Amino acid sequence: HKTMEAQQQIQARPEDGSGGKVRRNPADFLRQVLGYPVIVKLNSGIVYQGILVALDGYMNIALEQTEEWVNGQLKNNYADAFLRGNNVLYISTQPSRKGAKP
Image: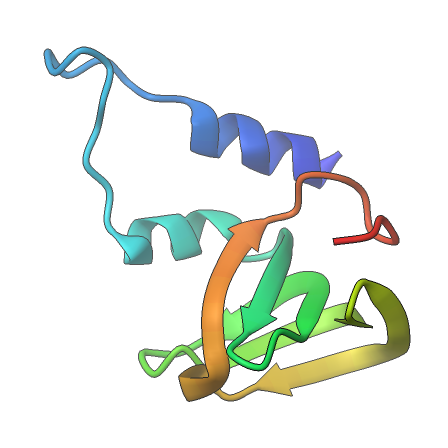
């Protein structure tokens, strides 16, 4: 299952002599989760859950199989969603399967 694989890859920390802590930058994280389920929270508080299919240097995001959550309640489902980067508060891996309350 892709979600579990992504979480395992992200949680894996190769040993580099620093006690297991490896410095990563956001670009590395985003390359790892491309094609996997993510949660995107906007500055407005609206949360989108879907498959990350594309993003650019401005943090503009394209998601597929997307759910829109407002105040903890599922409001809409979209085949494709495009989120403007300046509205994005954060992107994270999805801790549970799609359809779970964010």
